[in-house]
Length: 548
Image 1 (cartoon, helix red, strand yellow):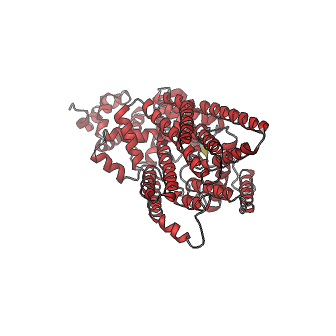
Image 2 (cartoon, rainbow, N blue to C red):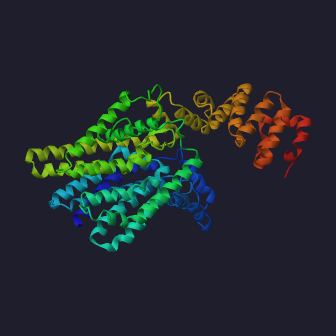
């Protein structure tokens, strides 16, 4: 075991070194701002903030441990995002070490020599740690939840393997699984994964004890069910779940099959990584005969057939394939959440099954092969590790800030509306308004029901003095979302620019009644100068214009 721990530390150290440059990245306004915005509002860890974390399912879903981790980040580093990024790198590095230990324990169930176990475990931990598929989970601060859940999920499986030999570990299994669920619902399928491990490689399943094996995991299933219900409630209230009418069951199945193929393809051919893969790229034909869906279906059928045909001689293949599918199932698209078709982060734990299987196969070949074969395998591993590290190092700077992230996405999806919208927001923050306008216009045209896109475009028109166009966009924004007070305020500015002072006054009265903090803007905003100089308008707003 001592050598296994050394190998796990090596895998963790290499992973840490590969991802160390991520510390220079900043915050991206794609969920990062939501997490750190709430941390800023809570200010400090207190009874009230802990209560909030454990009683809210919105935004996103129920994951109180993740909220508390971001709140702790804020206590330690405030607006210095190097600290939170280093924490992400550390957690992922520990996960690479845990993956190594996990494979070491699993291979110990066979008659393998120690050297082969070390090779299989070390290769698994190394590839799991440095693969570019993991870069999104590490470099995106909002995916702290993925890393935390992965840490406790791996700990749960390791504790379970120890429980099989020593029943005193049962409490550790329950606690670690609960912590995984409190970090992210990604761990929901884990009780079924443990049942599959009971079958292979633990070989605990017999005809007369299946009920007993299920009953011993009953607390885990109950926790999974509760977490699943809370997740659906949170996602539904957050507005992230697509209804069946807009995305039917047949389309969901096709998307899910495509995803299962996508992650395996990215695992073996690590190129073309994007932070966003549209659910429906432009011109996509949602039919079975479309090669985008037909090829994945053929791949899934082939792997499943091979696994079934080799069931007697090599049952571990079917077990690994089932575990891979199970871990991807919650984010497969059968219950569609968000506008993405797939996402690199969804495969964070799932890829461990095929990586471990391939590594174990390679170790067996290494054991039985001649010297030349061993040289080829060793050289191949070094080349693959170098390629993966290089690919990962190229992805890390993509997450540096909002603009670098979405410009990278546009390289692959130049007609997607979401990247244009986020680039517009990033350029507005940098006061590069003229550059932002074309991106905002495109987003408004492509997603006319998005209030924030219409509001951003309206603001840019307003700053450019194009008041009629600003009014059109801002009016659309407040119609879609009546509580978008910034858009309503900017609409008042546009009406002022057009000389419609009475309309502007009415709008400002509505804004200031609901949001008194806009009083300071009213007093000094150059766009409202003519309104302030108009006696009747000033009289109507005298309560808010008066000095405090």
